[in-house]
Length: 238
Image 1 (cartoon, one colour):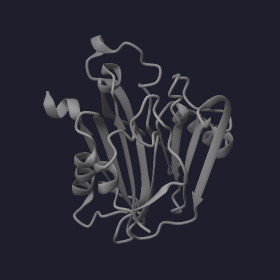
Image 2 (tube, one colour; image 1 turned 30 degrees about the vertical axis):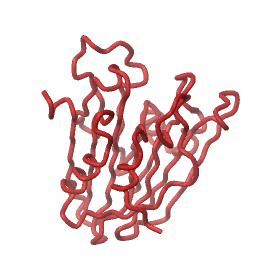
Image 3 (cartoon, rainbow, N blue to C red; image 1 turned 180 degrees about the vertical axis):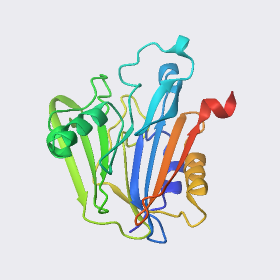
Image 4 (tube, rainbow, N blue to C red; image 1 turned 90 degrees about the vertical axis):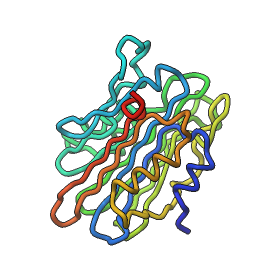
């Protein structure tokens, strides 16, 4: 069953950071969406900016940045046609392993969840290959116990028109925050009105108080031409 991603997000006050990978309704494009949310001033004081090979987070007001260690990173990098999207510096780990002709699986075997006790935020990662295959991974604690790491890998052999999969760091709001559970959620990619409209609808579906930034990219499978959208809350309100 293909779930309605807008409804899922509207009903969830705090999924945290989320990744969507899938295929456009017309079957002609791959689609990736990555968003971040935040509850602290440090987490909310961020925007996405373009780089040569993807995007990075940066402080909107550098004077308010107290700890950059888990909030400043490259969420998206493209290397040799492969798109890497993650919620932390494991983007660089995967990219480095790719450059050495080693896979994302080996790269993520060297990583675990984030050291932000008591939440132990999962590290979520996605890969999209030029052939249309993609993968999603969640690295988290086992039942919230930091003594044990649980690594989940889901691989999809091809893109299917109108179908995508979604993972997030958290199941919902809480204290401590409960980690994402289960397999990636199958969702409908309703982008017939274009990438910008799809991205804005996802953005609108996120909790107004907690949403921070969103990035969406759609690539033509044949021509490799890309279209990108970046939405930053602080730039909207500044």
